[in-house]
Amino acid sequence: MRVGIDATNIRHGGGLTHLIELLQAAGSILDPNTETVVVWAGRNTLDLLSDGEWLVKRSPFELNAGLIYRSFWQSFKLAEEAHKEGCDVLFVPGGSHVNSFHPVVTMNQNLLPFEWRELRRYGLSLTALKLLLLRRIQLTCLRRSEGVIFLTDYAQKTVENLSGVLQGEVAIIPHGLDARFFLKPREQFPITAYGSQCPFRVLYVSTVDVYKHQWHVVEAVARLRESTGWHIALDLVGTGNVRALARLQAAIERLDPYGQWVNYHGIIPHKEIHQMYAAADLGIWASSCETFGMILLEKMGMGLPIASSNRGPSPDILKDGGVYFNPEDPCDIFEALENLIGDPILRTNKSKSAFHLAHNFTWKANAQKTFELMRKVVQ
Image (tube, rainbow, N blue to C red; front, side, top):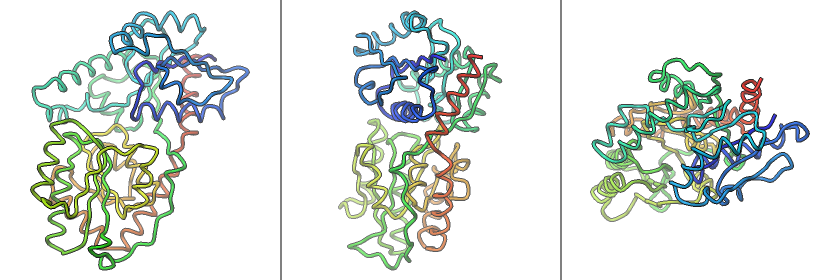
């Protein structure tokens, strides 16, 4: 089998992490004598991929130019190049397939275009228009593909509510977790063991966006500090769009004008983020729209007690390993944090459960299932 991978527009973020980890794990499961993978991507992306005798890297000049050049090449040249390479199947992890090559296995990694409630948060804006256009393109691609990968059952149900039952082979293949994101749960101490010089640290890592609700988290922690007198610090990591950042900054200025307990760190490189998890006492996840929730999984592997949004696939991933809340209700977030922070035994039990569950998610299993699906489609 000869597999082509269209990584035309995979340049950063979760899509790039998935591509790197998938191909690194593939090296241990593919037979280099009978199976080959050809990847088309920009040079910067290809430089991050592991080498192997089974892996062929292609980077035409269009893929190192602007979006218009990349889109033109993907639409009008990719199919020809895939035929020249002798590909039996084309894998499109980005989810948008607009050329004539078949068979195709595509992947849904962005649920935002498919959830009306979340789309409405953007109002009449260019972002909303782009998401609606993306939804139309991806629905067409999903219906035309011979194979489709979803990351969770929740994602499949959400998409098929709009697309109808897909006719191709469908598989649920969750992402895996890198070994550096595993740290045994630490001993949990009573909240009275923390003071002004060593506060209890709550960590929220996420892009700042209208569906991430960082401002509600800030308000909940402010109420908790005021009502209990507990020494709690909130660390926020991630950048985002201007509108959401402005709302977050307004909440911080209103509730912590002297910068005593809210720490906004902006972007921290992904290769360093496990150090933030290791320094935290509790992880919080307040997103109302996710395809999978990779950051939630990272917190699970790092042995943190977790307070989590009850929306999307989070309860399916975290199961009984966390305390849940409505991410749009600061009072509900407050209650979840109060229950978890105030009870070290609860923190201990939840962190151990989440840590155990995290071991079910491996990149080797992801690669095995992904290539099994492609073999099935080819056959």
